[in-house]
Length: 391
Ligand SMILES: [Zn+2]
Image: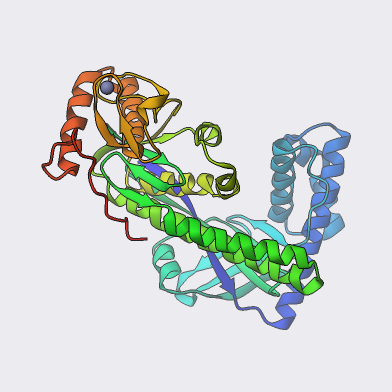
């Protein structure tokens, strides 16, 4: 069994007095982090054990924090400095890391118990059925307490680890990501990008107008707008990822293009460039990977170069194989198909030839699949008619 980490965000019910206690603890935690950073810099180390030896006792007395809060502060500084050594300058008093000694989930009360500088606080969480379902039967041992200054609210992000089946499979299924189509799966699933692109243009126009205005009110609106767009985009990515993973069968391997190539590979007009550079492909990838692993479906990444100009039947690679944005026609053997689907098949094939070392059987299977998609029509003669993926 493999494990998968998931974070559940819950809003906390906090009274005025409790709020000031939490804020004070956060402030002490942040100051502790700040001091630990100084020690780390002075002794040129990001090793947790070393830091603990160097400053644990002193920090604990200085800030009157519970032992494990100091340990978490040390861990946080060490990790942050390992990741971005130069960027870590200031720790803000907006969150605390908690572990099994400083945090407890109390299911019968739907509350959490949290250590503060004055002892434990038991705080009820406001959750819906979604969170309740995720938390059911769990015994979480790690969480982060977060304060949102903007909303003046406290949240707890509870970390859950769920056992999932060990990923295994032998049939590669490729996903081609782009703009005209957000995603095309080699099993025939297509997510057209038209309506999405229109919505993004709408957002961009609004944004430009507000930027031109430049007033204080416009800036505020701009901020709200960007949040709105981000949430919408995230939601689209969730839906797409969910449908992609639902379309897979046991035994499938999900093959994605290595993201570091995606921007150079997708060729777009100047007008489209702005659309592309801000589409959250990375987010879509994270969602897809997560949901696939949840079902025990392995995810592999391949180099997508030339996947849109190579013929999946004869292997001939030429730029003009792709006669238009939507259509692929092989100059050598005449194979024709929906261009993005061809790309997704090539992506699947790259993993296939890697994993199985057997191109031919893989290719045969795919050709049968292609005809299946074309609903019995000759896949070579006529590209299939894709109905919209229903976003
Ligand atoms: Zn060909």
